[in-house]
Amino acid sequence: MAKKRKRKRRSGGAEMPNAPNPPAEKLELQVAEPATPDFDKLSHNLALLVGEGSKALAALVEPADIGRSTSGLADAVVDAVKSFGRVAEYWLADPQRTVEAQTAISSDFLSLWAHTLRRLSGEADEPVVPYDPSDKRFAAPQWRESPIFDFLRQAHAISTQWAENLVARAETADPHTRQKAQFYLRQISSALSPSNFVGTNPELLHETLKSSGENLVRGASLLTEDIRAGHGTLRIRQSDSSKFELGVNVAATPGKVIYRNELMELIQYAPATGKVYKRPLLVIPPWINKYYILDLNPEKSFVRFAVEAGLTVFLISWVNPDERHRGKDFEAYLNEAVFTALDVIDKATGEERVNALGYCVGGTLLSIALALMARRKDKRIASATFFTTQTDFSDAGDLKVFIDEEQIAAVEKSMEKNGYLEGSKMAAVFNMLRPNDLIWSFVVNNYMRGQNPLPFDLLTWNSDSTRMAAANHSFYLRNCYLENRLAKGEMVIAGEKLDLSEVKVPVYSLATREDHIAPARSVFASMQLFGGEVRFVLAGSGHIAGVINPASKPKYQYWTGPWWARTFEEWLSAATEHKGSWWPDWLDWITQHSSDKVSAREPGGGKFAPLCDAPGEYVRVKS
Image (cartoon, rainbow, N blue to C red; front, side, top):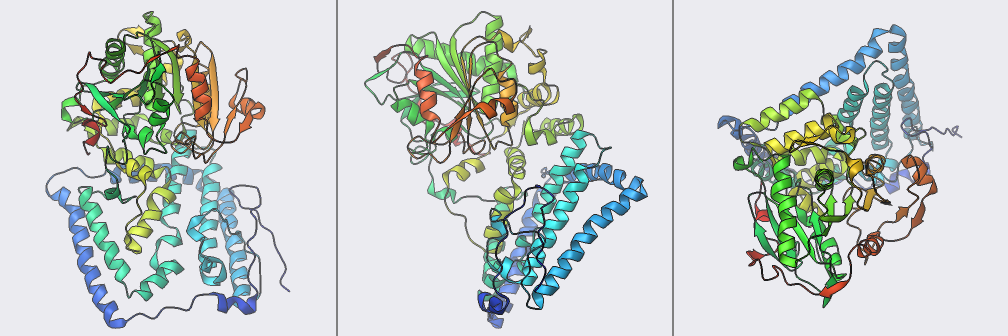
């Protein structure tokens, strides 16, 4: 009987549950019989594959031929090499450390070879790296039942864990360089997973042989289409977007655009109740992606939920900037959007004071507006709700990888020609934060299986990218992420130095537990900068799914806790977990700050003639 061994994964420390191995004598019976291709058809399909590959290559190089800018991949490669070089310096500078690094990986691979040999000889043996049921890449039983594919899975995990350990222990690398090295390593390890290649993925291999290569021909055709759609940059389709139409089954809550200027359309939603709360709600979404994440469909629509609860909802729909907007800076976004919207709401409803809600960077804009209004004694905003909003960027999550003087200067240079940052570049950044889920799973499905992705409204929204106006984007990157001026009390807008402690309005702040863009710890620290009462709530899941967790069909829980806690960890240890959606909790809070009820208001209030139906025109502009 082979000796049983238990191993802990280097990356976690907690032992993963071992997946039981099938008895050795039954191993062959449980592995699918290899498919036999039609060799004539396979030859024909290989010829077609070469032709489709040529089309894809032509689509890739065409932008360079006509002088159009490409993805900037070379800059990223240079930055990655520099980051890895700093880590390598630490391990190669001392011979003892070099031997330590070599020994760490060689001992694990020797154990893996011994394990694989025992399995090939028919013995049952526990893996060196236990199977992780949460890793969907290796869900197929062949990854465990076949000693060869099990070896590939474990070899990839051992190599990844070894490299991650070297980066984490490189003491001479500064924290930012180490963070960048970890990020680039995650991209490389995700790309080199054996699940991404036909020859090393048992499911892809079986499917390719069974279809005589037809899957690869279909995939190459889809690849060409996606490169052309990205004008020379691969724009991976994540959803069958043809199944969704703005104003029909997404962004479909009834309303009217009652005002439009160069930066925004202001939507007022039609009432769904005979009486409404007196104080209106102004929603400020992020200008990164489009507003309809808050109005995905009737079941998932936060906007519809608020309207049906009796709130008069106004929402800013941002312009998708082009060269005309290059000079629109943060101050313009304040004056021409937030403050203008307050003026319009006052005229349309007769209500000078409103409740305001900001999501992500829309919340950061709202925070800056509140600080400026506090300095000016402007009390038109009576309460503020923040979704996954940061005002202190000292611990700002994975996006900090892209923030240093050199990288920001490169972004500013790329915006000089057209006056904006291409939407595809921002989309690529966010996809790289979750490469397995948002990049490689679709590469395998689309280009190797040759299958169109299924229709999914959230991923259709995720792919509907927006451009960034040069002046505004530069201000945001430098003043918030790089220099953290708002948290330090050093940000100057319209000649006023801003201090968030002067903001005394009641605040409802939502963070999400698995957020990599606005980490819960960072959101908690951000809200401590305000000078008034704050209700801090933590939702399950991440930056999007944690927010879009409808009350009718909740998928995640939420936590409430005491505001006296000094740190997020202290708050969490004292927090109370609640089942279901946080939406009703927010509704109870917001209605307490909404005054009495009045008769329902129609869009425009007779003061503004509706310009068009919601969702308006700006949201339809493609990048």
